[in-house]
Amino acid sequence: MDPSFFSMGMWSIGAGALGAAALALLLANTDVFLSKPQQATLEYLEEIDLKTLEKEPRTFKAKELWEKNGAVIMAVRRPGCFLCREEAADLSSLKPKLDELGVPLYAVVKEQIKTEVKDFQPYFKGEIFLDEKKKFYGPQRRKMMFMGFVRLGVWNNFFRARNGGFSGNLEGEGFILGGVFVMGSGKQGILLEHREKEFGDKPQESSQQHLRMKVRKKSQQAIQRKPGIFSTKAHRAECLLPRNMQICKEIFKNVTLLPFS
Image (cartoon, rainbow, N blue to C red; front, top):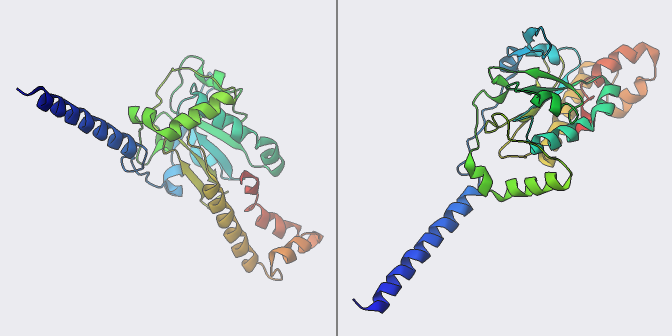
């Protein structure tokens, strides 16, 4: 056999393997193979059973969390994950303003292992509940397996969190992706639904703009329903009048989540 022919064949196989690997790496960094999230409905979220993490846990329907004042809720992928801890700290930075506005901050976890939730609490300044059936991670649960470790976005998130001083461990299930929900009070519905598409994926500016648009739309609808109030500027001025305090309070409860943006 001609040695040059053999060398050319090996070179072709090697080039083909490298090309296939490069293509796989390229596709892994697109959204082609990512499972598409199924949008949750208010009715679905309302009926989720949650448990308190006390010695004698109480089971209740999730709608209790936002029924009166709305809520910001984080569905935690894994409490021991340093990326989840970074996101929790980011959300917790909003808590002073949310407290001022009467909007609670909550988190749900899918399991309670050893001291994982307790160790997560320093990063998250709200109350945490157990979602044993993992309903907040649905309606269609999405997983990211080992493909996550070849995605450039994930590595960028790794370095960002590490540089921020966050650390973690490998305890617990961490493949089912989480998210963040901003809930309006009563039947206002879901103002923002952010679903992780990869490890460390936090709500982006586009989601925040979407929230602002929805809040603005709700407040405008409320204004149109109130006689004598014709514009945002007008109803802000009208709020100064005692006779309209209750009306304005009802309108502004639709706008209390603006600091999230």
